[in-house]
Length: 409
Image (cartoon, rainbow, N blue to C red):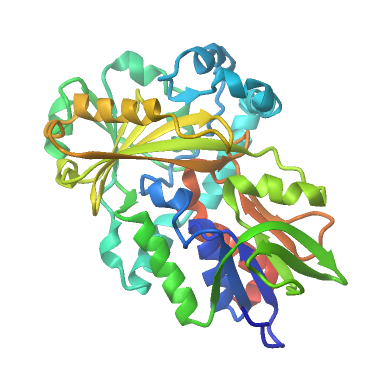
């Protein structure tokens, strides 16, 4: 890993998921000398296993009014869509207190407005990005179909849909016949559909990130595989402490986009983030891709069902369980069972499972921008389950702030 040539600002981006890779590409395209560094290959972390949904209307934060009443279920029901294992409760209490506080109506409205602003224009941006990267086939714009078994289940989302409508999104309500016209493989159990026609899906998130990384490298960006364990500022420039990286490397700026690991990386600098790992799972059925033709949301189970290049992916659940514990295979097994119960044709297909760490702030709003009191240090983390949707806008905000909006091409 050689020193950067003089002239353009030297920037290290720590974290090569969809957010970090988008930032690195945006900065490089505006002329910065950029090193993208991660312990793994680009896209192999949390971005690998997401559901691929570009969900611009998802402005309702995870913490909604009434969430306090759900806390006992989070602790007692290991099949709950939002689950907090007892063993992790002492560690999670500070975050949980902020999470509950974020459910106040005024806080929810403020969070929804900020999410809507960050997600505005995401569909067009991702469509243009996929086309520009030479992978237009990864962008599927057929809408998202949210399903409910009955009026009672729909009523449980009575707060979220008005937030979508306030942000300018209108859903078409469908009866059972309307559901079958779009997705005939869906179980008879689902009788009410809400269809958001202008939504999209990325059919292979890993390949999408890899295409970004390829464009970044082809444009002169540098990628290093190293485990960054610390940051230090000396004489106004930043250095990385990383296994396998030479000491003494200096950068004008560092962007921390390390997902759920960002909190530990920043804490020694006095940058305190109320960040938790939102452990998400998926089950994927090889050969089942054609059972649905768009993203389908089983809204009563908080499960996303998406056609992927390599099969049918069932993603969901939120487990607040930290970074150290191994995956709870029961959580992935539940997703597989839900899929088989509600989609015909999956019984004999092989299934693989996955777990990843989504970085989650108590109010579901990511932290994007300069770190106060630390010139040259930039933050881009806390995107929760919306990292794909928000990635390009996050990259634009960081590039505008770091290089100036006038540098945009």
